[in-house]
Amino acid sequence: MTETRDGEDETRIAHLSGWFRQRPTSMEYWDLLVTDERLVWCFVGESFKSMLLRADTGERGRKEVSDATADRALSFSDRNFAVPLDSVRSIRLREGTLFRRAKLTVSWTDGDADEFELSATKSRDPQVADVEALENDSRLSHVDIDVESAGLF
Image 1 (cartoon, helix red, strand yellow):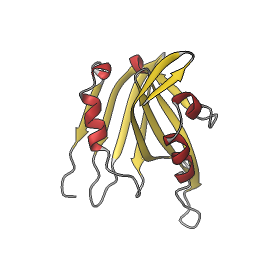
Image 2 (tube, rainbow, N blue to C red):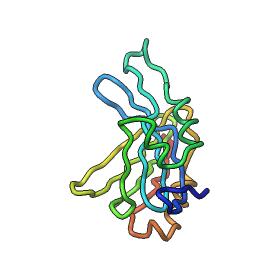
Image 3 (cartoon, rainbow, N blue to C red):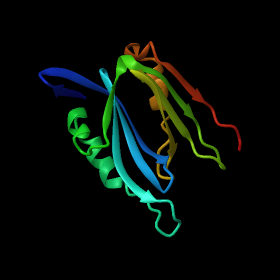
Image 4 (cartoon, helix red, strand yellow):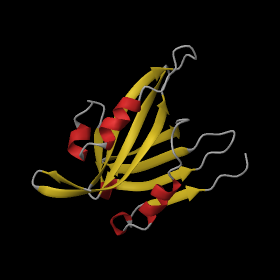
């Protein structure tokens, strides 16, 4: 898929969907678009941590992100941000098991070192193949990409 940004072509490499980030009082739902120029972090919803109020509210946002260009996805929320591909240092996926959720950790240096750690939602498809495909992409040759296989538990 090729997307136009300011007259240039930007190619989407991957869409990692169905992730959440624990906050003190809520759970933020995020998707990650990987293009040949940048990583686009897309906030797709939020719910409270309380068991009575918890719900995966990101489904509508995920659909919008999956159909959007990277620039359009950036405009959906003021929480969305992009990281230049040159700044990305590592992408690590730890597969989930029966008793633990999969984890996706991305680190980058864009001025200061930063890291985002996300956990898989229950409805998330296994994205091991998507992350492994990133390992073979020459545009990400400078990135340490690792998939940690799940054990039994």
